[in-house]
Length: 519
Image (tube, rainbow, N blue to C red):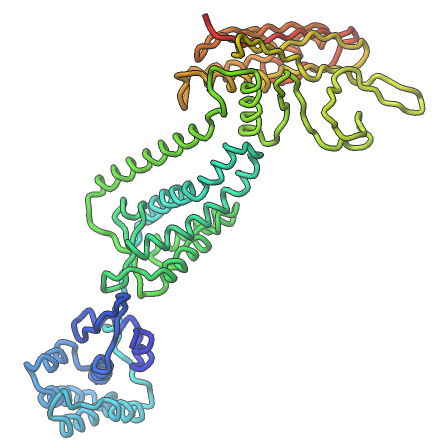
């Protein structure tokens, strides 16, 4: 019979059965699945223990009778004398002891059932096993070990689970918000899949192993079965971390930390059959191993991110391949795809329907609407806004290989109409990425390239030139009649992409950006 069956038939709690087993009073066999298989003899032993402990017989004296170093008759006689001193309280127990001593000369011939019934009838109370037999495992606190182990495990499981999603995002360049929305869900699924398997087969996880923790059956080395491990993991995620839900997850984490610090049982540890163990080892050794593992995990994550962010095509490039790389990075790094570039140097974008009552009242069809925007009302047609839209993009190729790409714009606005001009930071940034990341020797990560990209983003409406990854980059910008100088300076220094509104004169804006091989 299994633990549940013997628990029901003996009337003893599971913790007490485990305690008697740990004390050597019974030794159940193990099945092929490593579960205990209790026999009728084990049941009879438990009933004898239940009876004798109810008679306040110490365990060491019961052990002596069981081992044959004492007799049941002598034991009952001694216990009877003890009970007479507490006649009012233990009169029923004394009578049973005399009967047992007279009727059962040998321990093995003792039938506990009728005596238990008489004892319960005489005392009018159920037989209660003394508290000292109900040993409960001391709960492990170690809140920081628990938290750090789980943090590493969840990072590893989440990374493995989201790898297909990241790969799909990199290969297909689908919108990034799909990845942002699905990543938490896949992380939860990954934890629920991998952690129960590891706990079932190894009794630990990478984070727990590094910090000397494991989960075992109380009083033995048996590991959790898969379903118990799954229930434990799900309870940790819900009661301990609130399934990563904002605010609620933080509240659950704080409550769990407070409970474990006070020595209280966490929801996933209320079943006393399983315990979290700490294997003794140097805390410095565990700390060094954990730091090393975290460093390796961060390094692996950065490596994967770098691999997935590699361009689709590598140098030498054609104009079509550069445009394809540009479109890949626009989708990979942007929340919504925009400014798509074709191999003829045309920029297009899809903004969807434009709200009625605004400057435009029809869906965007890919047409460049830069220029004068008008609004017709009962008073006639009025110029309300004038702006350049896309810059001109030209490719230069020699023998089928790209030798230069240029963005240019020479624009003059309309006097009296509001206007603004873009600094085209996105165009410059992603064109440089599309070519520089394809260059030999650029590697997964280039500090020089990152510094140059920061220089571009911090220099709107300013001239600059530099060399990076074997490419020569140059930008020239000039403008006039947009706003007074103090307001204009403030906008430029803060990195805004629009220069603002006109000052009554026709604004002018000239923009030129070029990338070509250095040398």
